[in-house]
Image (cartoon, rainbow, N blue to C red; front, side, top):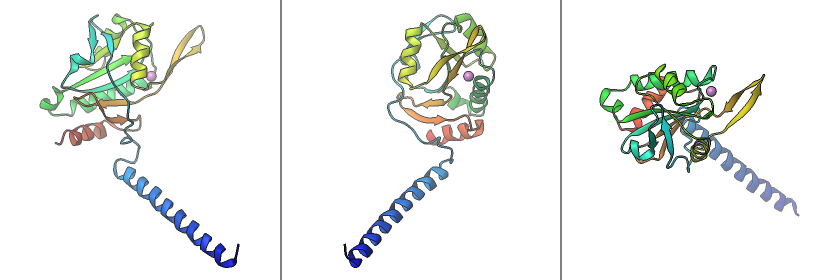
Length: 203
Ligand code: NI
């Protein structure tokens, strides 16, 4: 390779590197502008049909919520810290919305621990947060199916004679058409969630 070729190659690679760098910088600026916490990284293929049982023992499917936006959180009732914090956040975010928007949004808690979170446990648990919160459980197979649909990670971790649950923690905002509109992380505050719901709804 001649000196000239080497120089040419150097410049081509540099130009490529700069373009790549600019692209990456551009992308990170874009995500910064949208909150900078990755909340706007909306993955595809999340959500879909489900059949579960609510805290009153009624079988519930996604069709029962047709036309509504859903704020969904997956967790378990005996979770010591994260689940209560996130459900409290949903409650605050929901309460800050105008009444006409509230009536088109359904907050939902889905257990990843169906063996311990029986109907009566769920009933008592959701009542701790807000009257509008629906608690969904069901048979292990039903929970496995909904976890798969929403790409939820959850696993039993032994704890003494008992177990705890290790689980992913996202608040899903599903649109009235059943598609994922936003995925909120634990770092997102309640007012950010309220703001995003209003933005998405065009208010
Ligand atoms: Ni938890």
